[in-house]
Image (cartoon, rainbow, N blue to C red; front, side):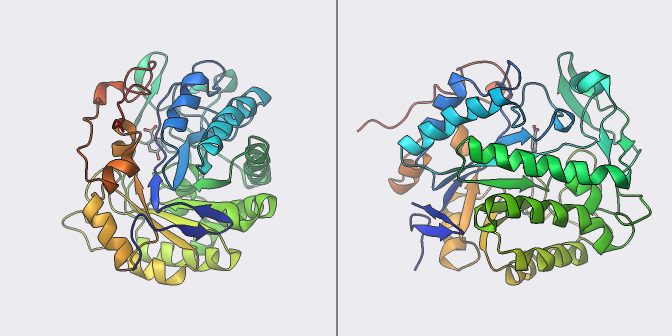
Length: 362
Ligand code: PHB
């Protein structure tokens, strides 16, 4: 029977265990959105994870939505990430980069020339983002024209090429949490006409084009994708029929041969089965997907062990426990107590609450 500690081959990636470090925004890329020495140390410390998924990283200047998040579109950023991947590999770990475009969850002060954020729609959500001036309401977005979408797909492709150059084992496309690709998927946001709006196949088109492009660039066996069918993160209502939408998306992704699918179950950082709404059937998605199945959202160690043992998942992603426990894998294996998370040090700042969490002594 498999456990969280069993090795697994995920696409082309051989992982030492099934404990995944979830992507976690830390806002410490203070200089040109380049990951610096502290970030190298932070990921190095956590390299015993079976797989690290990097913090979400913008694929272009227009893709940024929060202060000091790292990018993967300049030579300096590639060089900064190269130091991260070298450090993780030196410790025997594996790391993929999460490719991010925030779409309308942004503010003009973060974008080139004070541009408006871009999205599937002109409608602004009642959401906030973090800028030089602290938390502010997001700026009104501009709906991308269909003829701008090939350049957007090309940005994902270029970011993937950059990720290869930076030494990553693979990439994960962020199609969750109401960011750009999710803004195209959901009929609660996407109010377009034409080839990218209306029907489910039209709303799924951009994501499927992006996945085909990145898989062509790096090989499908080094690509994952993250979805969150039921979240309402960033004031974004659910799709009117999330089951039909995501059944279709996964059916269309299946023949690509992707390494894994990463699903956030329920409300991001909240209930996996929110009360008062019909339960989403995640097993129906799992059944449609031939690659590795990664689950996420507040799983305890015991729940994660059970999910893997029962074949409900191949991989379990842990977020906050990895922030405060660099040696989480060892602590779980030895049933050791976990460090307390310093919530006030999650976003921005320096080493405190980032690289200074203690590990177990031998
Ligand atoms: C965040 O920066 O708050 C953030 C980033 C990516 C996510 C969710 C939250 O998927």
